[in-house]
Length: 173
Image 1 (cartoon, rainbow, N blue to C red):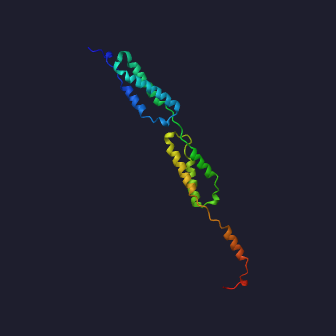
Image 2: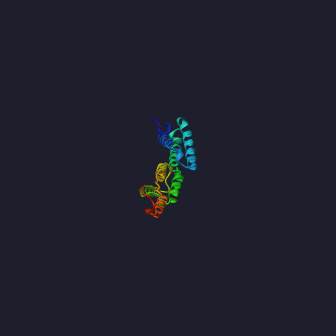
Image 3: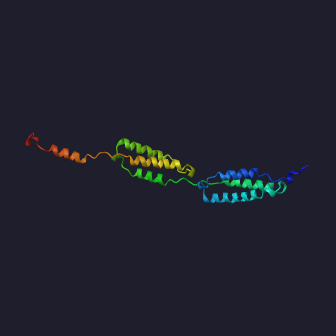
């Protein structure tokens, strides 16, 4: 009978762990946790290159531990936070505006965009940057679309001055 312990190691779990690690977008995660992943990944690659000469009896536990370590490194990845710079700048710009200078319709639109921007969670991960960027872009567009109210000061002054003239002093022509 063939001794199962002399068969080559089973690399299925390690191959799956490597595939899982290969699917990771490292740009989303902190440098420290990516470094730990890369170390575990390099170790896994080393184990895979020596698999043909390893036997279950002597080496299967090490292969299984390597797969577990690589999976743990993937699970421990800490995602970078989203960038709120543009959103915070747009909110600050809106907060500095004087609502009385704009038409009510354009102000209502900008205020709705501001309220939506304020509703964006302050701790989103980088993988949800699109949510933060959309809120910033929407608020910026609403601010840029604000329509100033017409300034009737000069017209009102001209009308007031015209009312002071005595119409009887002028000809109809």
